[in-house]
Image 1 (cartoon, one colour):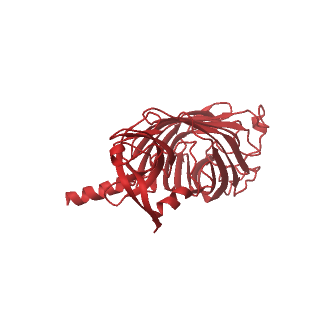
Image 2 (cartoon, one colour):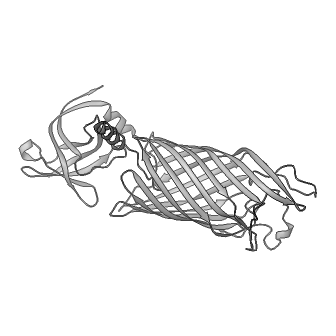
Image 3 (tube, one colour):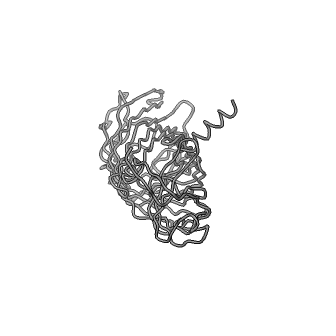
Length: 397
């Protein structure tokens, strides 16, 4: 029984998805990703446009639950697109004329489309330009009466647009320092702002831990700056996040990611909005279940072929740049300078995956140096990777 359990555990992890995808990475050509998410926020205090904090009493509340799906597609290995839909559920207890009223509201909140273009990685650093257009699927009306409101707002309406730059730098230990800075126009009645994330990601084979900070800095462009009392009221419950004036906040977070099989991963994040202006303070919990199917078209074509080789060995060492490999095959095996070689991921339980292509730079009797020229899919050439050369047959399955 123990042997069976170990066999399935090894088979599961051997084909694991990447636990962490850096901000600036794009999908390979023809690859797809589906992100099913839930995002929960609970208000513990509100901060008005003057920076005055009010802690909610036990009778008052504001809770927001966002849920939806985003789909991404790799048009090329540098360009990916995204389309998504977001639903929302709101619950709020409000004090109105010395009476506590309870409200709930749910519905389709917004749809989004976006693009990201990633430049080639150089010296373990990559940059990408990204942006989105989000359209609210609801509309708000101003509250002008003194009677009990019949409903509350689902959120800010209108158009939300953003454009900016993301980056990552991979350290020698294969961890990541990464960030994102976006200029954002969250709506016609809200000030433009700068949205940024900075995080450090520690990555293991099937698990990743990210520590970061999210920040929104207002460009102070609200039309009612200095005349806050004149801004028309949108009844939204016990919150300062809707119809805000020059909103700002800072939220440190911790994120844990786990690879689940060959295509799935789960990302969980806990954030705490602890300071801000014209916003709510409180905890935020996010859970993303993501399916990422990533194979380049070139890989799919090559991997659909059956190949036989007369020379086989394995990688014994890699250069710091991971662009040159040392293999335990050489002249005695028939290897020659200039020969083309293929790198395979092989796990002894059915895995035999072509992951890269290279060329022999130098050959000794029982050793060779090989330049890694082209990679297929997401796996990396590592110590123990199978090296095969002198292909003698190739035919489609």
